[in-house]
Image 1 (tube, one colour):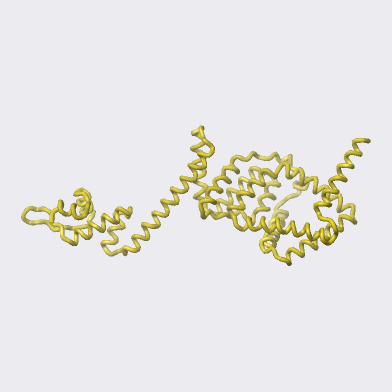
Image 2 (image 1 turned 135 degrees about the vertical axis):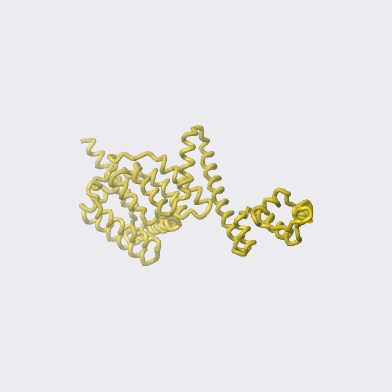
Length: 327
C-alpha cells in the first residue's frame, strides 16, 4: 500500500510517516518500478504503535529502544509515567505559588519576580536545606544568643517533609512569614543570662530539649506521675524557701516580657510547624495534656494549682508596687 493509504489506516499525516521513517522507526520497501514506498501490514502495526506512544509524549528515543528491543514496552511506559508525575508536581508547585501571590494581589512586578524565584527554589530544596533555611531565618529574626537558644529549642522538629498539597501551601506561607518578619532588637530581650551563653551551654540545652521532646512524644502515666510529683515538690519549696519564691516571681515577670516581645512570632511559627512536622503536632498536643495533668495533680494533692499560685504571686507583686508608690 502507498503512503496515502497508510496515512488513512493510521490517522497519521504523510509528513509524520516520512519523519518516523527518517528516524529509522520504520523501513518500508520501495517499488523498483516507480521507486514509491510500499507499506506492509507490519509497517501499519508499527506506525499505529508509534502514533499511540507519541500521544503519551513518549520521546522518539524511547520508542526506538522499544522497537529495537533494547527496552520493553512496560519499561517505556513506566519511564513516561515518571516523567508525567514530575510534570504534574512541577505544575502543582507553580499553581501553589501563583495562588499564594494572588492572595496578596501583587502590584510590584520586581517584588513578585524575586518572590516567585525564591518560593520555587524553596519548594525544590532538600530536607536538610529546608531545615537550614528555617534556622537561618530564625537567627535573623532573633539575632545573638537568644536566636541560637530559640533554634535549639525547636531543633528536634525542624526537619520537614513536604509530601502533600496542604504542606506545600503551608510551607510557602512559612517561607513568606519568615522572610517578612522584622528583626527583634537584641536589647529588648529580658534575659540577662543570655550574655553567658556559649557553645557548651547550647550543647547542653540541645541535649535537654531532645530528651524532653522524647519524653513528651512518649507521654504516658509514668511520665505524667514523674512530672506531677516534681511540680508538687517544687511548689512546696516555693512555700518554704523565700529565695526560690523570689526566683520564681522573677521568672514570671520575665515570661510576661518574653511573651510580649516573642510570642506573636513564635505563635505564628509554631502554627506552621505543627502542620509541616507531625511529630511537633503530637508534641504540642501531649505537652498541653501534660500541663493540664500537672495542674490537676498539684491541685488534687495540695488543694491549689500552679495557676492559683501564680495569680497570688501576681497580686502580691502588685500590692508591693502600690505600697512603694504610696510611700
